[in-house]
Image 1 (cartoon, rainbow, N blue to C red):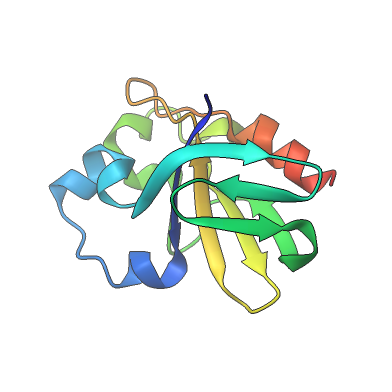
Image 2 (cartoon, rainbow, N blue to C red):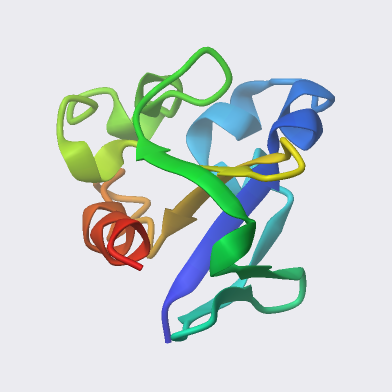
Length: 121
């Protein structure tokens, strides 16, 4: 099972940041569960399904809303690509931040592999 942590930009902006949100992403990201990538969509179980044609842009970079530097566990490894969030910008201008198989001990994830898979669809 591949586990995701995800939130919209609005959900993150409206969350009050504190020590817990810097320690573990589950306190910052509102949604979590199993992710499935199919030939038609990205399924974020217990939250939403995103069809490929609903995605306007995908990237994997730190920005002013979510940065790998904001999590205590990632402070040493923030420069590594797999520590950065995937950012999906949908056709309706909704922005979704995503981590897949994020590791609490290292702050690293499977984001690089998942990003390439999303980008190539």
